[in-house]
Length: 281
Image 1: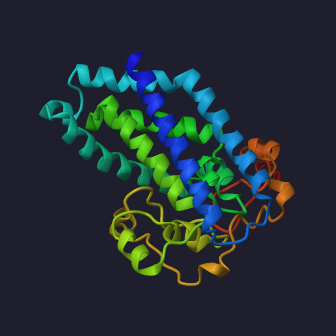
Image 2: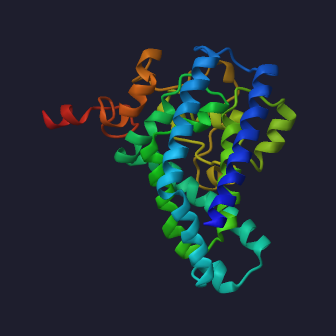
């Protein structure tokens, strides 16, 4: 229980610090003028993220941390069997879990059922630091549970898991932020980490671009597996999904119902139908 509390506090502090920092950056160095009121957009996305965090923390958050702690105590997983020191466990776990996150993120785009959930995140017509919090609770819960079998295989410590989650959250805030890094620096950073330029392509309303650049922390995975895309004219990018072109279609209530409603049928491949439409065929 103690380690669960410590890791929760650590993740909250990192998330709050990132939100404050990148919000200030967006005010000072805004890249694109948003379509929606900044305040309204922030409130919707942050309320969704805070609600998800609170609910999951109460239900399964502590159990997942305790689960990884039990694995370590019983020597389950490759890293535990090797009896590596804490620092090495954290570094290797950070790399491995980031790879697993890449695979899982790609599955959200290629598996119809998973895309129904992930569509909530991609329906955002504006990108800013709060877009990193815009997920349906079903997706967040499923992603948390998905990493548990990976723990049995790899054996990351509970601290390593907390570091990964905090790094993943900070990276998401960074590459969703409505900022643009000067070209020489951006190209250099993108060799290792995912940048706003790289990830914003993943949020365009063009299927071929949305189904690319799946990496979350380290940019290497897209380059290794042939899913990397680069654009130069970012000013012309249109964010969101063609199925939800109006702001009123992505209200808080409609985001909660989006995975179960129309236009969520068979994945993001340009041919989208609802469950009812398929049943009536």
